[in-house]
Amino acid sequence: MTVLLELAHEDEPMLQFGGEHNARTPKEGLLAGGPYDLRLGNAHRTAVRLALIGPADAVKAMRSFLVRLRDGISAEKANLTLFPAFPGFEAAFRATLDMRATADIVLDGHTYRTALGRQPREAFIALVDLYGNAIDELAHRDLSIDVAICCLPKELRAKCATVDSRLPQAQVRALREQQRARDSGQEPLFDALGPGGEPLTLEGAADPTPEDLLRRNFRSALKARAMEAKLPIQLATEHLWEDRRDNEDAATRGWNVAVALFYKSGGIPWRADMKLDEACFVGVSFHHLRTQNQHVVYSSLAQAFSSDGEGFALRGEAVPYDERTRQPYLTADKARSLLATVLAAYRDRAGRDPVRIVVHKTTRFSEAERDGIAQALISVPSVQLITVRSRHEFRLLRQGTYPPHRGTLCRMADAAYLFTVGYQPQHLTYPGPHIPVPLELVGVAGDDVEQVAGDLLCLTKMNWNSARSAAGLPITLSFARKVGGIMAELPPGVAPHPSFRFYM
Image 1 (cartoon, rainbow, N blue to C red):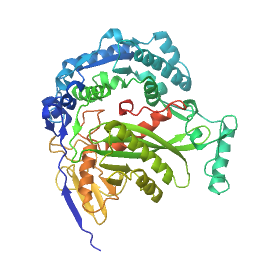
Image 2: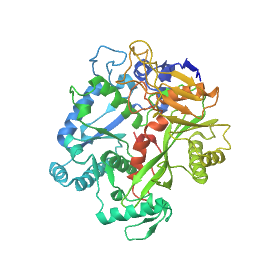
Image 3: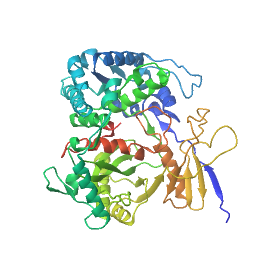
């Protein structure tokens, strides 16, 4: 049987910046027009107030890099379209960098070393508290801070970047027996017990204390602590402040952290030029939560973005972990509840319903999920459910030195593949080390595939945590694991903050 391969090319989406300037890359646009929020008049942020937290040596080193960030950093590489000089914070963002040393909190050396000297699990808890208390102090000062920069030395990360708990053998055997009984159909899929042997509801088991997690991540724990204090943070390590052969060039590091600081302070660096306004793009994902009592999966509405660029994260209900399928799905009721929550959040921000909602998942939508989503979004004129997969066997090679261009769209029978990574003419290179893997688009009908492809290309350019031209995954899916990890670190009963600034 002959299968026809159709190739098309989607144009690189434009980004919007200040002064009515449009550009294909963040660096080009910021240099020419400044950030997008200049178009919003008084809403533009004219100063970004920073404070540093960490041991004395780390704070000193990071402060030196901030001086370079304020004044500008020269280019080091030949390809100036990909690696331009950083012009200085005020030149790029039309805002000053307020970084008075008197605002910093330098951790007491003896207290820091004592905490670091403990066993990894205890050191983790003590150091999260040490940094967390400093974040709390900054959040409650009369002179408000926009972003706290937490300086994490190498020895801290080596000791407790991630820590694991080992269950007693008796508890391991009990959990295995429970799973064998479930697999045989002798017990329900969910049957968890609390620390005192009491039965737990599914929602109760899915909202444990952070100490019950089998694996904890220092970044996630600190982000959750900052979320409680309602103060965005930026993590910094020697890979940011040191000029080393194994680091990116200093100007690139400057661009990336500057964009992140401006966005976290409340600014809008750029906006994607979507073909349709009043749209909402939603990524539904599941966070696998392992605790000392039960395997549970959060259904996490990890990322939702309106076409004007505002992002918000919402936590949904929980579903039990199924060892047999390892593919969690929502019931119709839970799918309806999740998307109804998204719609309500969009209304709160925009004052109206969106004209269009597009829902992304990395797995196929079940019939129950489709039914529940349809019920929740009955008032929305256009709804699309798209499965976006990055794990598949399709590859495409072309003659010459470089791989297919970013934006190449391949159709073969009922399958469609979009290259969100590949050769970029604006940079005269392919900024990647391997053969690029396209995204497989499942559930796209006929002529809609080009619109879906255009949307996805736009959504790969909405990561305000760096100044990269684009990412491989759309923003609706790219941060799912980090979002779920931060939500898991919140104490029971504490609702996650919706603003995406707390997750980047």
